[in-house]
Length: 315
Image (cartoon, rainbow, N blue to C red; front, side, top):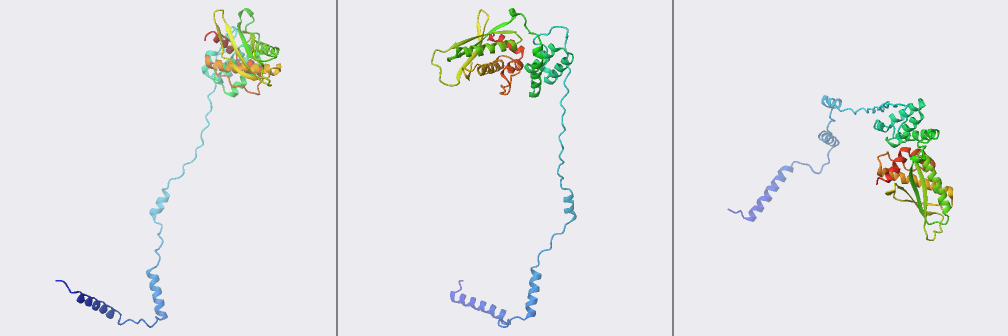
């Protein structure tokens, strides 16, 4: 059964009015509260809204702190001492050595070979000592310090030793070529002759080095420096082997400077050729502070010079 709307409205008004009347008939809305009542209200509010007490540290918290992981201690790495060089056999010092002497000991390492060379010097076995120093350079993986020791020792010992090949009939002949378009042919020929002589001496006269120039017919460039190409050939009567040419810029009229540049060019040519055709330890890049003559004489060993010449007819 549906209640009529007027009756529903009248019932809501009577219910609301009754609640308001009976709930507020004893309240005094006009008289302000006294000071005591205000103070009592404040204290009541403070009690109801007091902040929560701070959490106390329990034994569990203390235990957690005690169990916190400690930072690991930094352990200094122990310095590993390099192994002592192995003492290598000197061999029979009363027998003439081979040019490749001590090469089979190269796997023992550069420090052992340096120690062997020093021991041979202490026994005044100069020829054997020179060969051992040369093996430091051409068959071991020498450090820069060890290589420097070998260079100095070779420079000191080599001039005191006789030519390795005193018989001119037993030498190996190779030809140093140079090609350029220049006016002063004599300057280039003079530089090539000095370079060829230095190579022969550096090889212990194992090599006999001739030279040949190829002068272009064109008009020489009007510049202070011109391109010059150098290369080596060797003929055994049946075939001729040769290296790829190496080019560099040079002053064509200054014989002294041209000679230095030709020697530097020879060093760089051998460095590339030996790295490609042999198992020798790689030659280092040319140091501008090292004289060109010293590079040919103390950086390239006599064994390297011989094998370089032999490689020309094996290609």
